[in-house]
Image 1: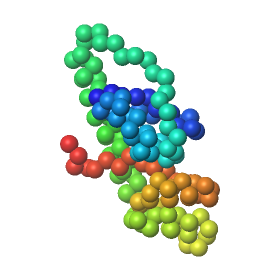
Image 2 (image 1 turned 90 degrees about the vertical axis):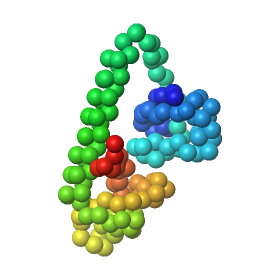
Image 3 (image 1 turned 90 degrees about the horizontal axis):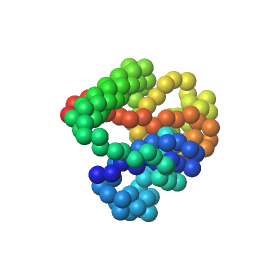
Length: 140
């Protein structure tokens, strides 16, 4: 496995793991890699510092495990807050967001499913949307 620092054309930076460097190239050519912030497929490798093994693999693994647990907890808390404070509209998210934006229905906070293309179209129309990490509560 290899971890790359990536950057989209809007300068959003994020990291992703790949089986190997060829797999990154294959997924990029297929358009499978996208920015988790804006959905852009114009993604390139960003400069990153090399990782040097200093012999303390156990300490590094523990820190990584702790970081993963903290991120997972934060994602679960985010999910809980969204579910408590927003109305679930399922796959009608794009349609409902437009109705709210154009004043066809009362304004309210919503969440649901939308494709990356739908999310980009909403954003292009000036409708504020956000792609969220959606961790299942029973994930291991």
